[in-house]
Image (cartoon, rainbow over all chains, first blue to last red; front, side):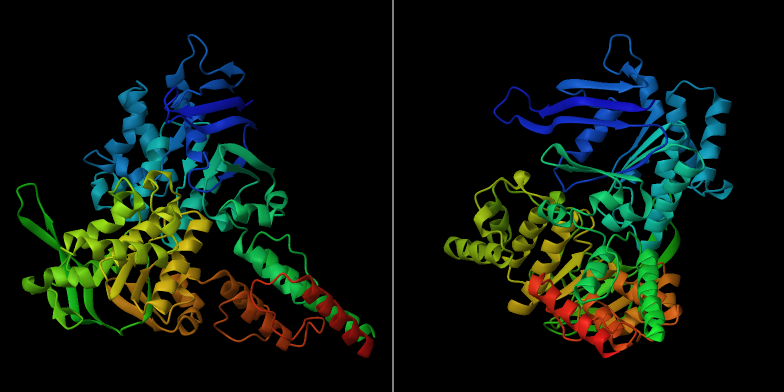
Length: 290
Length: 315
């Protein structure tokens, strides 16, 4: 079933002169098991939108249904919702606070009122998923490296065993290897644990590599919604709103402009390499044919 | 401009009572010389020592061993502290932590005001600084209503208003969207070329290093590689082993090279890649002449189509 966002609006400082529409009539469906990239320039409404998804912010108007139920309906258990729809904030490592990694990761399950044993089981499993073994259990979170801290923080949300995982720019400030590790982890959560993923990102290269659907926000509205190939056909529109296409798309467009016979609808360096090799091979066979 | 000689720095580990229980060597025998007017990019994985290095340049940290001099001044000499901080300005990741004024021009004027610059000159400096980063038309706005890239450019204007000789940018684009990243990197190059300000750019985005005069790669507190962007990015495997990457055009060229296409090492841009591919002779349909970057001139397409026809006719 998943999440259904039905014509929601969110107004900051409602009723005052400072009132601003952060979300303005947004409708979209997030079906179970999808891997979605949510992009948009700073201030486009992405972060506000994801915070409405697990009931942290209440829309000014419109409805949000989770598995068919209105999450702001009377008697709806939003605590349970927040366990099922996990949200990893930007720079989540700033929220690490316990004395050791295991206790920190146990904090979420503890708040769910689970037994000591269950808290421990879930925390250990979550840490295993993010690639942090027993040797980290008793380490202070503050002694970890940047990438490790972030993984520990993600484990804290994973330990709630959510069905939907929303990550708000999980790779900001990480080195290329760290970025690959976190995105690999997110991709595993999708393929191995069958979680629904909403990845908020500023990196078109990352989004192109991993997601199956892209939602583009601009001025509090959804501007584009489709597969990466569909969305990246709108290069100019994306640039006009402070975004871009993946770098490899620009490379292929330029090669085509210079006369090479290749498709420009590529998403990864590997796809581009294949396309160029194909263009080279084809030419050779044509030549030999003549 | 900046000299570091055998620079080492230890972070001390302390227990709850404040007793030193261990040391971590964050910088280890770093010898770097940055010339006036140079644009240097510093790469390195998280924890490689980049930021620790940067903080030594404007005396936010002091060497455990070795020396750092900025424009001839030793950073450990307290008498020169404010002069050093005025000459070597710093920009950090999060623009929201660096902006304090309610109005853009007030924020930019804060630095020179603190230096005791006369009021009239403050306003002159504010104007020239905002113009230098292309934010003059926003001078009366509240910083809260700016985009990330605009805020970061206001932060940079605030540093320029102190008339620095050098700006150290510690991942200034980490929190920005693609448009904001472009704006900030263009502003940095503009300041370097037009105003002659020395730039040290720390970044995790490899493409941002392409336009630098020199790239320094740090690992485990040491300088692991150093050279022009072309020299450094020729070492694809080595960079990957240092948890880094190369620009996408470089990676694409590298993969094509591995697949057997005769391409040179160290291709950095799409233009270079196109030129190199055209030279292989495998793509006779490609135009040999360089169309200037970024031109989507429809007539260029026609010309290329024309040459493609011709070359096929000749065969």
